[in-house]
Image (cartoon, rainbow, N blue to C red; front, side):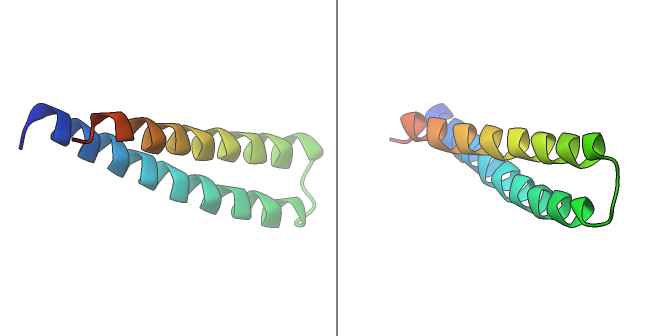
Length: 68
């Protein structure tokens, strides 16, 4: 496997995993909101989950440029 294909595979795989993790974390933050915590706690959980989700999307989309 050449260097570009390996880079595409690894970055794409990490991107897909982060995207899925971000969605799962976002759903969990929604459930957390309804368990009556303080506002800052569920807002922080939701913000972190969105950051993870968006990082996954960026990595996944960016990996396309390494595909041959």
